[in-house]
Amino acid sequence: MFSLFSMFSRQKQYCESLKQLPQQLVRDLPMTPEIERALEIVGKHDPRLPRRLMLRAEQDIKLQFYYGGHYIAVTRTPEGLSVLAETLEHASELLPTLTEAERRFVTVMRPAEWAVDSETGEEIYEA
Image 1: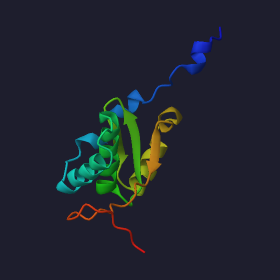
Image 2: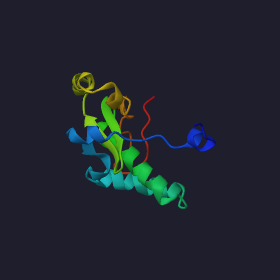
Image 3: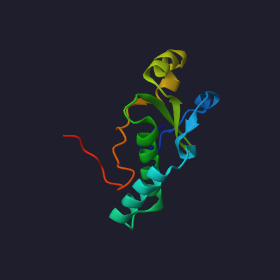
């Protein structure tokens, strides 16, 4: 029977079977002085930013710092974003081994290159 509630129910956000694969949780990547400085700048820009959004900023900054400019395969887990493949070649090998259902939960992405001066904390833009 159709119900209005089912129309708005949340879809599952992660795939249990992907947990069996080797992966790196982004939140567990080391916090470097450069990442700390970039997070300070985010906090100064908007000091009222909720903790949830600061954690998202940390995740995005870590992705840029560690994987910026490279294609990676990621998936969501209850613990946060997790990297399944650190290169395009590895992702190309991994994806065919997954079921169609598992592939729905994997995203191949290319984080922006790290472009923050570690001394000043200012973003660097090349002309």
